[in-house]
Image (cartoon, rainbow, N blue to C red; front, side, top):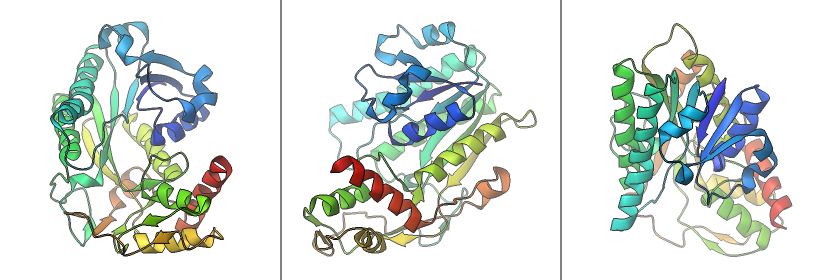
Length: 310
């Protein structure tokens, strides 16, 4: 299958692309010319690559290459208080670009579209979060992701393309962005100093290779001749772990245990204290469930940064 991947140079994409190649798919990478490709450097020769900013239009892309499926991973993320220019950039990257891509894809006969969402889209609750939970965007970034999803639903409802959205819960692992787990790991490795909250936040931390498995399962699901329409799947570990527990596990892998200081800063306004994934729908319909124990996943993550940071 010819699969176009957006955001393939990022964290999830850098783990997904080698898996797609191993599954004998032809991968077409859509990126910006300035994108950092260090995560997939060894794979570049195996990819067909298009630079978005060098295309006259998306039509040019589809005229040059037949594409069966699009996996949309790219996005512009800012957690809090974006400026006007950052709002415009998020609108452009998270809504306008994928909407234009989708429009040309449907005109060019692309059959399927796998979208990437986030648990930030759900209203905060202490209970399990399933696909029917009320939605309430956590921040402006989340609102833009939800806006594009509505556009995708429109195309699927019009039978112009079949689609799914995978809503990811706290993926972590090697080659991650500058999120909390890499910050903790790097602090322990470099004997730095990191002040954190009390660490009572409980999230469904999900190892990246398990997350990648969900995309492979979604390809099989969406490619079925019996499937047509739109579905949402929560992708996350049904078990939650507190940030405090994560710190303690990572400290076991390091001789330096005094660098991370819990309880030194207050929680952010609107902090998500609990986000527990109910992934039973994905298990039932996709045949997906996480396989990697939190200790094993964090050990692999720590080992990666130890090898690449020292």
